[in-house]
Length: 115
Length: 118
Image (tube, rainbow over all chains, first blue to last red):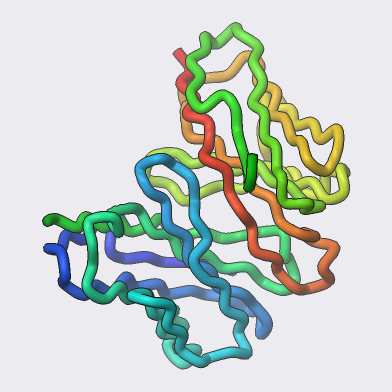
């Protein structure tokens, strides 16, 4: 069965600290897609990244980086030099090639960045 | 307007009321989705429409009735709701949805409607 686990319910850091949000997934499909979304207080889920199961290269986008490791079924997200504007709930999600309509979300990690 | 918009942003209704949520996407996508986000629970997929046809109904009670008159608009009609239906209802769209043949399109979300049922 498909499942996404975000074990960290809430993380608090001080501005300029680095922070890593963990995501562990379960799937029986060999082809799948992983996503990260950000949900600020306004409510809208903002798409951050999509990665398919055949691409294990880590990705960096500005202060954001993602570490995809199939061996541990993890897709962790690191924010470098965090800022107050990074405060939000972050969701990791999984979609399998056999059921592409369905995004399976984790329960989210609430990140609070204090000045 | 760009992206995915939802109206109203906030809605309070009694259990005997009938109301509708509206979603509009300006991205030229062919698939649209309704999700429910309750406190401390993962987002739950409710309905999927692809080219205006419903392709998924995730065991949602009949008091929620979706309508997709065209690929840009999606409605969720509500009637005789229960207090436990209070949640944030999110709409999303993607390029092709399930028609992409095993490739998952990225879903883009609207800001949601915060629904409170009294």
